[in-house]
Amino acid sequence: MLQVVQPALVGLIDGTVSTVASIFASAYLSGSHTALFVGLATALGARISMGLSEALSDDGSLTGRGTGNVRGVITGTATFLGGTFHSLPFLISDVDQALVVAYAVVAVELVASALIRKRFLGVSLAQSLGGRSWRAWDSRWVRPRRRVAFTRWTPPAHARPKRSG
Image (cartoon, rainbow, N blue to C red; front, side):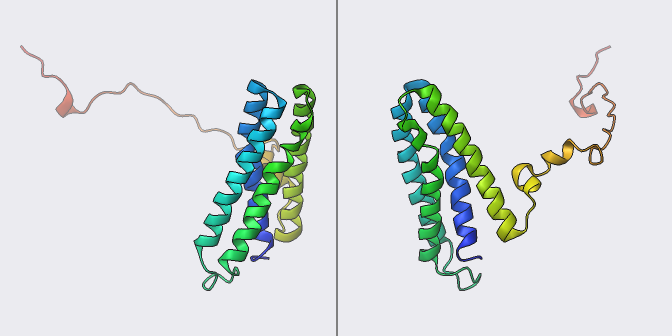
């Protein structure tokens, strides 16, 4: 669990989240094939970054999480995959079609991450997909807001100008 599933899940989530903005921005600004290359380059950079940071974070002797090198390879590979999946739709030349497919791929990636969290970590789908924001729609969880009275601010006595005569 801590040696394979957790590093892979961290990588998938990071790959999805850290690359999506640059991919979609480049698609809107420069077109489909540019977004593909930006996505692949970003995924590769994220792989190196996440893989090295996980490999160098600890040797696993204190935490029981396995060796750093194995966790680094797992995290880096999962990060690359998470960033690559939603880059591939930009093989489609028509940027509008590619964006629609890419949106669907991102949604599938996020649901897949939620299902992995549910299966291995016991986290509910609602909490994985929205956390506390799902609860805000449920009236049982919405608390009434406290009214706050605002008064006019006055500076402290030592900062007030002295009045002359």
